[in-house]
Structure formats: structure tokens, C-alpha cells
Amino acid sequence: MNLFEKEAFSLFAYQHEHNPVYRSYCDLININPADVHALTDIPFLPIELFKSHRVSCTDKEEIVFESSGTGGIVSKHYVNSLEHYVQSFTSCFSEFYGKPEDYFILALLPGYLERPNASLVYMCQNLIDRAQKPISGFYLNEFDRLHQTLAQLNKQQKPTLLIGVSFALLDFCEAYPIRCTNTIIMETGGMKGRRKELIREELHMRLKQGFGVTEIHSEYGMTELLSQAYSKGKGVFYTPQSMRVFVRDVRDPKQVTQTGTGGLNIIDLSNKSSCAFIATQDLGKCYTDGTFEVLGRFDSADIRGCSLMTA
Image (cartoon, rainbow, N blue to C red):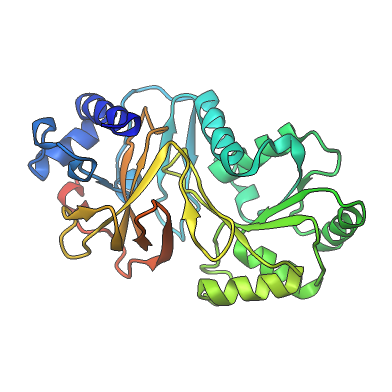
């Protein structure tokens, strides 16, 4: 048994005992700790329950992160330690990109900035602060200023990270095409309701053309997680040490495997005070080397299994 497995089994036992929502879900599907012998045996909580229940091991929190949603009830993640979240996303970022201080960090996150409890905004603000560069920051609807900044950083050959939601990056590079020779372009998703949905290949092709880069990077995170996976191109994501991704059968959610195609299940060991074992609404493909791709989302509004706990 490796270190990740030991910590996952220990965390499962803890959360089964201290998280009432998670324990109730385990009871409803007739799973108890004695039944768990492999990571794929651990019950994965349907992510929709973050909308209707307080998914937490404690009754105290330092902040409540909220999802953007598309109207109606949003997901809420009760985080009892902001310091722990900062340690988690800093560790994930550094594992793949090195120190934030090594970059000029520019963020293009319209919509998110209107929500003070957006975990993505909190993460980007913290990385920008750590970068300690005077022109690092958020560029809401300031495309002209962003273009000038990118041109200046390119001319000076400064290592730069431009992170943004997909539709905003696309809007910008269509209006201000540029060749970014020392810049990482990183999309975080986010097209729904803002522009016509594009498959990843077409989106990345347009972004590569608009920014003059050979690859588009991606960040995979969500309100209900404290860790992030990253892709440095071609839509293939690598997980940090705190995360593992599995697939579940779309017809039988209890059938979980390490490889194949299906619904994505995530173990996030950083989620110590809420739930570390989450069944997402994303469809994807997992490979033998631990990498994964995101292929789309479920058509139905709710993941099968949520109906067990609609009270």
C-alpha cells in the first residue's frame, strides 16, 4: 500500500465518522468502512449534493466558496481553513510550473470577479500577490491595456502566465491577435451561456492562432475541490500528488475503475474538512499513467444517486 492509499483510507474512515451527509450517503448505498479494500471501493459523493446539503466534517468555516452556476441554487463548499486552501493550490501550481514569483501573472476572469466567494478568483489573486510584479493583475474588460501589457512583456522576454475563462480569452485574441513568445496561455473552461459551445480541439486551435502559441494549457478545478490538475497541451491533464482521478460506469455508478471512459470520480486529499471523494458531472477518459481527459458533461441535470438524498 502506497502513501496516497494509506492517507485516502484514513481520510475515508474519518469523513465517514464526522461528515453526516457523506455517512448518510454511504448508508443509503449500503457501504461501510469494512467493505472498502481498494480506492475504487470508496463511495464517491455525487457533486450535486453540495447544492442541497452542508457537506462538512465541522460546524465552523472560515469561508464558503460558491460556484458560478447557471441560475438557481449554487454549490457551496464550506472551507474551515483558508491557509490550507492556499497551501494546496500553491503546491499544485508549483508542482507543474514552479514558483509563482517566476512569472508575470495576468488574469482574464470576467463574471468571476463579480462573485467575492469564487475559489478561482481567490486562487488567482493569491498567485498574483505572490508574483509581486507591478503589472500583474486582473484585466476585466480592458482588452487594449491587456494587449499593451502582453506586447511589452513579450518585447522584454518576460515569462508570463495569462489565465482566463475560455470565452474571454477567445474574445480577446479575436479582437487583438498577438504573438506571445514567452507567455503561457491557460484556459479554465467557461463557455456555457456566453458563446457557442466549442469542442476542445476547435477552441484550442482558435486560441493558438489568436495568441501565436503552439500549445494551450488548461486548469481543471472546481468549487468543490481544493486541488487542481493541469494540462500543458492537447487536453491531457496531470494530477498533483494530492489528487487521483477514476472513471465510473454511467449506468452503474458503483462500478469504478482506474482506466477507461465514463463519469469522472476524484479523490482530493486536500479536502480534509468536507469530502475528499467526489463523483463529478464530467465525462472523461483515464489512462494507465494516471493522466486523464475531459470529454464533456452529463446531459442530465443530476448525477444518478443524488435522488437518494433530495430531502
